[in-house]
Amino acid sequence: MEPKLCIIREIYFQNNSNFVKVLDTENTDKQSRRTHLCIMIEQEQNRFFIPLRNNLGPDVRKFGRIGHALPSNKRENAGLDYRYALIVNDDTYLEWQTDKKNPKSQYQKINNEYDAICAEFCIYLRGFIKSVKKQRHFKEPLYRESSLINFVKELGIK
Image (cartoon, rainbow, N blue to C red):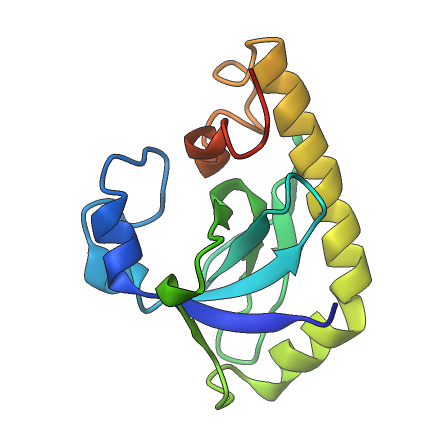
């Protein structure tokens, strides 16, 4: 699969207002303007959408990798944030980007490093699932802010 960028429509956030640990809580307008990268990973047939943030900061912290840096000329600290990945399996919530809205350098970096991004996210996802199964996700710094907590059922965690 090749990288696809999209916007998740505001209605998704309105319909899921009970979600915790999401970016821009209670600001559905801002949530629906954020660019997301779609990654299709064979995990219960789910599609994961990783938000592109303007100020990710270091993508590797002392407790582990939280994302993937995608700096641009105007936003040196931009990057994908694995902690705030969402699962969206219904296309009616998605607006695929056909026009390039982000800097060309970011698109090139996403294309060139897509396999690495997928591999990094898979490691993050496996760690999150393991942490939830052991009921340690609220204690571990890498996972305690993860929005994936909203998708325990979709991830097949009992």
